[in-house]
Image (cartoon, rainbow, N blue to C red; front, side):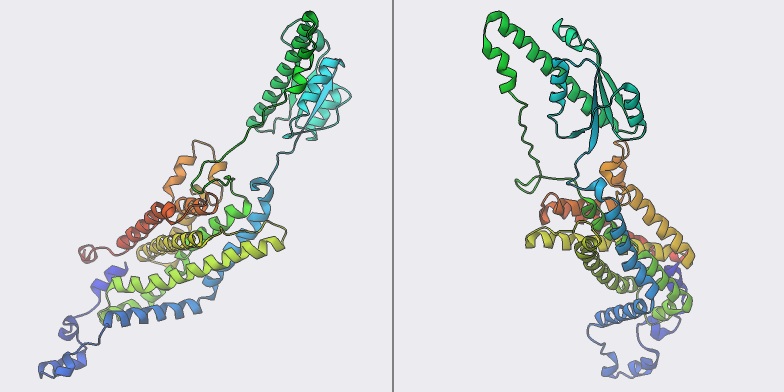
Length: 444
């Protein structure tokens, strides 16, 4: 639309077609050498003037600036506090279980003790009967109830497969159900093995076999995370580590609203036509809008980091901590510039094809929401079902968020985020190229 205005504007004056000012045409014909001299760096001077014009227009659009800074700050604060327990890297699973021992034998008590070794599932007071166990499950007071039936010890003594009842809350995730079930199976096998060794020691008169299961405890497993940043362990993002970069990326792409507002306002007021009459190319106009909004994006990055670093802890949340080292800071800054390139390019594309402010708001807002929804901004990717996770790769917001996590969580450097940054820059420039249609299309 803007390109069509450029091609249809009345540039019929011979002086304008030759790139001269109308008043200087006679002086050129007379051969005045001062009239032929063009100002040095005329393109740069015009570009700086366009930057100044954009900054002045932004200064007048207070509501747009408020949306760019206040909206993401509120999202970071609210979401970091709301998801602190869900996404906290230090969260411990606090699922309680109880044991209803109907056998009341030394073997059943040994099974109860073996289950208590695990620190993942918290042990609660045993229910007096099965009815009370069901009541506590329905009330959500306990997640699992293991019922040891009568005759459990005799089944173990006769080398028969023991039968246990496993009551659970249906709201407990399947992976946790299987985890507790495997824990019960391992404890039962351990109790049965201890009973077999004790009987074998009695028959062979070898007392050491009776105490072998007391000396051999559960194996100690050392977990090592394999990542790009050396030997420090990798942990999933906490609430603030997820929400600060996520909503920063979303707010950067939200510049589509003020850019469209300014762009369409200039089109309606005839500013674009006047720039065309002064032989200012459409590409130079887009470049004049590019740098000021990249500057706005960098200011957003500083404000959002400050919100996560100081405001969230004041409200009871976890503080956002930047990685140590100048290399990591440089990588984050480079990634922020790449996100700005993609966001501003996308915004200029929407502004160039929209015919009204309402249309730009719908196209830009809906596009940002869709990219944020599938890109792990609103719902983290690791929370999504496995079948949906590959679809997140379609969103440039997911690329940007993965780059931030690469630096913050995996301690990556500039070399690690270069592919992500290159993809974002390519996306931004492709959007810019799409915003400047060919002259043939404009004439058609």
